Length: 159
Length: 241
Image (cartoon, rainbow over all chains, first blue to last red):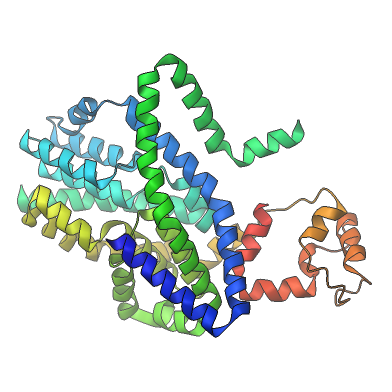
């Protein structure tokens, strides 16, 4: 649904642009083309690698890691798994639900979901291209720590 | 051979995955097809989301005046700018890599480092649709507590990043990627070829020869200089080539 909204915004903005100035629209298309050229291959590469990793790691193994009985270890493990993988939401949420039901701690699940979306180790090469190494690396460690903090607080509040 | 090496070096990831997929195909076809299936899901999402994202980012570059972005998202924008950044992220679509082009466009146009980080993070984490899915599976208490904690923490992350990474740090890294041209032809391809003479050479051909001899750098071209001012993205991608 949000994709449709995005397409509508892009189309509307683009229509406005053509209406206002053909020159500027041309310039913007040139920029789009450059963005496409510099990032598409990179993104495809990242996706292919993540797809491969997800295929060789069986879900049972992820379950085992996330459901570790030592709470602190399980938080760290879940945060790490969330960091290094990209798992689509329609897999991640049902997976988390079964994990919660089978006894995983709330903090571990919170760590998993937060790092999964916010940190993005796999997309690092793409982020380098847009913001450079210094920004990316700082953002990654800060987000990772923030996710752990969120997880611990969740554990205290709901646990 | 050298050329091939360069192509591989520039596309490390894709070659690495081709290699892995190739090996996997022979070792375990089952895993191979599973990986392809996984990748397909990601790619479909990417193909849907990235074209509109690229168009929006480049239109921001071209149309929205720097002053407007600086005023709304710059260093002086204060707490209101932070909240607005959270909202932008919240109403967006797509995974975090879709946020990079948009956030970069806003950053070039004057958004502060803090707000750039806030836009990126909230784009990734805070989503209305996702919130509904999350409460469906994990309960509304879980989802709302997580969001209530995440939003202030993202804003704090912005302040922290602002102290660690300066605007100049980022710009320097993006502009310092060195380009090497192999021939006059390579240089000419990057020039406007209008033979305006503003650089001091008679023609673009002469100027390109000057670049090859090391007398001038390509950005001494007067027209390029102007184009770069209006669209920093061009600058970056030219150097990538």
